[in-house]
Length: 123
Image 1 (cartoon, rainbow, N blue to C red):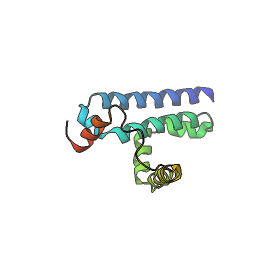
Image 2: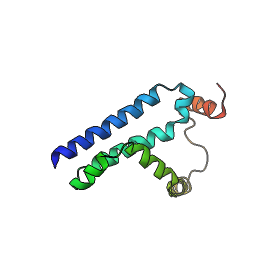
Image 3: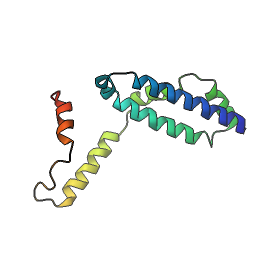
C-alpha cells in the first residue's frame, strides 16, 4: 500500500513541477494573467497530496493511472459554483464595518502604487 501511495505522490509532484516550469517560461504579462491558475494549482497539489495519505489503495491506483490530475481538478473547479467571493465580501464587510474607523488610517503600503499602475495598465 505504501508503494502505490509514494508512487502517486511522486507522480503528482512531477505534474506540479511541470506546471511550474510552464509558468516560468511565460513573459511577465502572461504570468500576471495566470496568477489565479497558479494559486489554484498550488492549492490543489497540496490538497491532493495530503488526501493521498488517507486514500485507499484502489483509489490511489485509479488516480495514478489518470493523466493530468491537476488539470482535471482545475477544470472541474472552474465550472463549480462556489461562494469564495461572497465569503470574502462578507469578511471585508465585517472587518470594515465592524472596525469603527471614522476616516482613512494608515495610507498605502509601499508598492501599492505599483499594483495600482499594473491593474490600470500604466507604469
